[in-house]
Image (cartoon, rainbow, N blue to C red):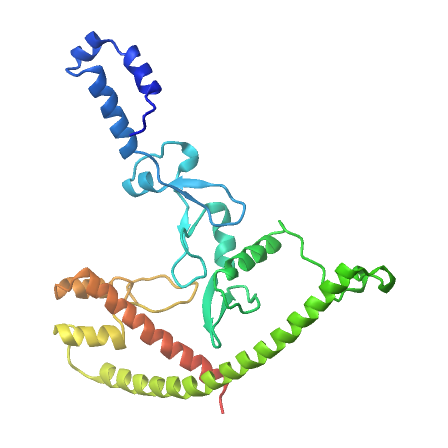
Length: 306
């Protein structure tokens, strides 16, 4: 506790001991209880990740289902950016900017040669960086440009923005030389990264296509088997990883109904075999990795039919 007690002393002077006695307490205990309650119920504010947005919501009242201390701290409509993006720390986005962040979701890419990149949902990609946290500032600048809050910089080679030769100074010439040296360094680093990408591609792609062929044959064999794969716990787990108990239709116009497996099949199977929640979640993650690998391999085959 701080040594500053002026506010507490003021409150003590405002509470009549007789009034406190009627409530079966003392002024000191009443104030200490109020301070304790205020500390326990203090808000846990979360700020929107969109650059320049100051909207906040109270995470504590939102999780408890209670009204927020202030109306503007309501958590209704807020969303959280999932893992795998370049956003670290608080990943909350307000309703005003949720659509923009979804349209520009920044998936983190680990590139060869110790580089990091961004796979933005809109197709934008910055220059690969050695220091991954730099990517967020580049992505935020991209967001501001796309929403019109930051004008796009003119291209370096734009004739209308070139400095006439006679007006160049030592500082402007030094800047041009710096750009030239940076471009030469980037050229060499880009060549090295491209070579590393090509090597990684020729190593990984045949292995991925081979795994796809094996998984496809195994899945076909399992689906054709007449046994009841839901009866045994181990069989149910094998089916969950290789085939999946949930509907995996990702079409935008698809709605789960009686004609598909829905999105609760895995949980129903977990309850049937008394599988703990953490194991069921891990099984769902394993299924996602298998399905994602198969989808990626299929896309590579379609792009290279030969």
